[in-house]
Amino acid sequence: MATQTIPSKPFEGQKPGTSGLRKKTRDFMVPGYLENFVQSVLNAIDGATDKTFVLGGDGRYFNAEAIQTILKMAAANGAKHVIVGQNGLLSTPAASHVIRKYKADGGFILSASHNPGGIDADFGLKFNGENGGPAPEALTTKMLAQSEAISEYLISDGADIDLSALGSHTLDGMSVEIIDPVSDYAELMGTLFDFNAIKSLFATGFRMRFDAMHAVTGPYAKSILEDTLGAPEGTVINGVPSVDFGKGHPDPNPVWAKELMAEMMGDNAPDFGAASDGDGDRNMIVGAGLYVTPSDSLAVLAANAHLAPGYKGGIAGVARSMPTSAASDRVAEKLGVASFETPTGWKFFGNLLDAGKVTICGEESAGTGSDHVREKDGLWAVLLWLNILAVRKQSVGDMMADHWQTYGRDYYSRHDYEALPTDVANAVMEDLKSDLDGLAGRKVGAITVSKADNFSYDDPVDGSTSPNQGIRIFFESGARAVFRLSGTGTEGATLRVYLQHYVDGEGALFEEPQAALAPIIAAAHQIAGLSRLDRDGPDVRT
Ligand code: G6P
Ligand code: ZN
Image (cartoon, rainbow, N blue to C red; front, top):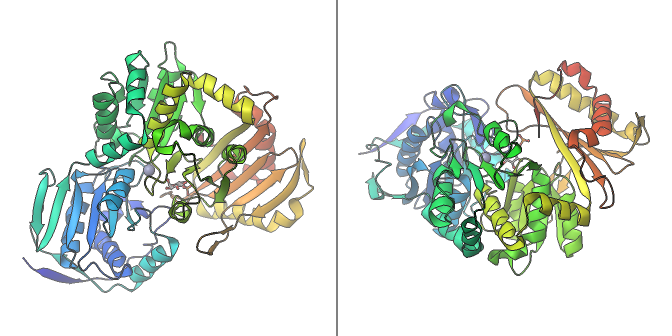
């Protein structure tokens, strides 16, 4: 076995986006493409010599092949040890935990998250640092610079490792440990939540459906919900990971988790429904007949976290991404703890979590998590909900009603226009930016703009500034519309329009959200000139 030095030339566009490098699978399969990016990451972190890495992914097409390549490159670059999930599987939050638990120098996570998988779908790779969190912008900038200047990569010509065989292996002098992907994570969940209370809940006949969407959380959910907590077999559906996610779109929202939604909205619905995405960091929460928006879920978790053992001392603060509704701010205010508004992207929570300024974080894009790892965590959110329901002994509907009566309700929806021609989407954003100064005071239909800006974030921990994070338009009624372009799409551009309207605890709390938001939706269309998109309506409404 020997290290091979392979000459290479830069590929264009290896710029890590909101969450690592995400491209079409076939792009990643072009000889040298994956290798260049991995070498660029290793160069950006000043080499691999004597380092320990964690490696795993969501099991999508090309996952196993990419793992073999990364192992051989880690060995050739002098790494000491790599911890790999069995069969190449590790959910994103589990990978974050394993990095932290075994004090690794970082980890490679193979996933395109909620994007479809398959040879004609999407693939992705991201690097997380020793805190278990996604590489910060300063580091991803270095990776890009390395990828633009790369001239060679190093790879061992050793044999493939059997990814199904638990235990120790060796590759060209580097040790490789294949671990059970579930057990460390399950143990951590057991320290945070009152498993006995949740067991009792299931024992009383509480019915739940968890849709793993043919993705990585299947084995985690079966082990924890069914085997440990006693939920009946069949509670977890679509629980076997497949390379193309059953040809589905593993994004836990009402559009893509249709099967689950139909059951939860139907007669004889289970008490509680949940779903997670391709790599297990997102979650959807739904009660019998009631979808809980991610922004409300974050607020409910923040308000009730103290009911779970892991948070019984209370929380230090709550952070949300800017487009997420203000519901969690209201909870933080009442609890007397700090709240933070960050740009979209979990990586912006890392500093706040590391500095102990916040305990719970969340995003409108179906991500919630806490300081237990440095990623959002789908199953964690589901277990915290279960723990809260077990203690409060209320239905999801009654809990939401209580919450809204206490804090008021932020009606919320996100409208996505997908696969737009890039020039059209850019023009919408550019026009909004150039109109910004003239917007305050403008009357649009029945509502008036009070102020408008382009969100810029000053990180209170490291002092860095991230400008240009989305256009915010506030209305005198307290409503808000936000516009930004997705940083995770792989086809054309996706315009996201985030809509929010607040009603206090005495107001009309039980309207249909699209109806309650109608005046803001109309105003947002007019202000941004969305008729030029030439679409009948958004592709996705959350
Ligand atoms: C990923 C990130 C999230 C982010 C989401 C939406 O899931 O981990 O932090 O909120 O993408 O990103 P986008 O740029 O597509 O709106
Ligand atoms: Zn994900």
